[in-house]
Each structure stands twice: as C-alpha cells, then as structure tokens.
Length: 271
Image 1 (cartoon, rainbow, N blue to C red):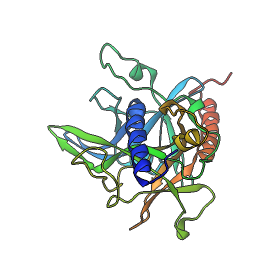
Image 2: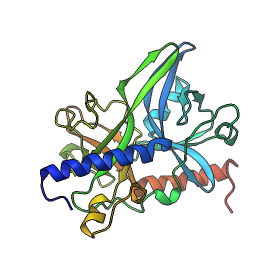
Image 3: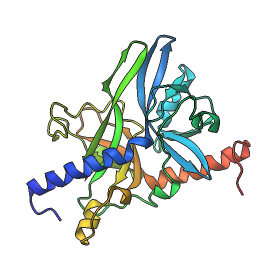
Image 4: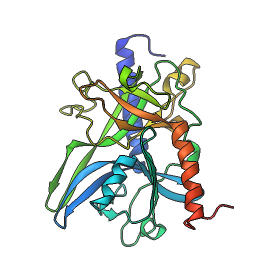
C-alpha cells in the first residue's frame, strides 16, 4: 500500500500504464459526418457483450446527433470508419446512456477489415459503484482537443486518465451519479510532452474501478484484469474540477430494459 505522496504518484502511473494497454481494444472514437470529405469528433464509445450480442455503449446525448448527422465508429487496430445503422436504445438525463447493436457481418470481416477490437464481457460490469476509500478510478476516451481532420481522415488520440472519486458539486448532487477529480492544470504527465486535455469529447467514456487500493490493502498483487466497469462519463460542470458519471447499477438497469426492447423488436432472442 502506498505510504506517501511519491509512492501514490508512482502507483497511479503504473496503474494508468497497465490500464491504458488493457482497455485499448474496448474503446472507439465516435465521429459525426459533416460532409463526404469532412468529419468531427463527437464523443467516445465502448464495446460490450450481452446475451451473446456485441453492442456499442455511449451517452444518449451522443446518439441524439443521429437526427442530423451520420455517426461513425472504429475498431481498434483499423482506421476504417463504419456508420451506425442499427436502432438505438437510449435514455436521457439523469442516466444519459444508450446502446446499439453492432452488425456481426461488420464485426467479423477479418479478411477485408482486420481489427483487434474486443467487447467487454457483461461479467466485467460491476454490480454497483462501490469503490473502497481512495480507490484509483480509470477512464479512456477521446478528447476533442486531441482530434483533427487530415487527408479526409479523422485522427484521434486516446486519453488515459486515473483519478479518485470526489464529492459531487452541490448543484449536481444526485443518487444516480458520482464525480471523478479532473484538473488538467494539476495532472501528472504520463509521457513527456503530453498534458491532460480539456474533457470535451470524453462523454461516453467508461469508468473502471481498478481495485488497486482494495488489492494493496489486502496484500494481493494487483493486475489490470481485476478492474471492473463502474460507470460512464456524461458531464463536465462548467468551470468545474471534476467529471460526472452515471453509476454502473443504473447503467445495468437500463441495459436490462434495452435488451427487453431489442427482444420485442426481434433484434435479439432471449432464451
């Protein structure tokens, strides 16, 4: 267990590097199509499996852009952008979460479009957001500041960040949510020359309970595979020093509702 500030910084660095590599296959930038030659980063999404089906999870407010723009996603290890065409199942604030099925024919095109994307098993969604005190929480997402359109291609670099839970700002206190410390001016650089960006674009990023502190306090050697998804980022209070996320128990609750709707529409079969 880290005993001083220097040891905590080193632990956070080690955990961030491990989680950065562990979560690479699960995450995608979401882009909106402005024209046949131009796109713009919209937010972040992740891939999960439920009832044997692969689906994309992000915020409802990201899916809202489908009303006026096509939305593109990518698979790790491949620059090709594919458009989301399936029906979306989403719910607005205070949950602000949504899902859409990924066509198996698109996911399983190894000969034409090889990729290394992986969907998070449903078993990695924690039953509830219950980190121990001072636990390290991790997220990976795509910040607008780290995205640009070059040569008809949207280039987006992922941001990996580890922080701790902090009290919700008074205006945003709600039993559905929790807050993560996010202050770019005070963040430690993981790599030289890289600074923590403004969080615009991180909406839809999954938050992981690393279980590092829990393991260390019990004398267990930590591994990134111990981590579980504990929420999804959706907000950044204006001028605030934190990100706001929906707790995983409410994400799971709406996922169950969405699966029922998918079954009713015949998109999936529940056995």
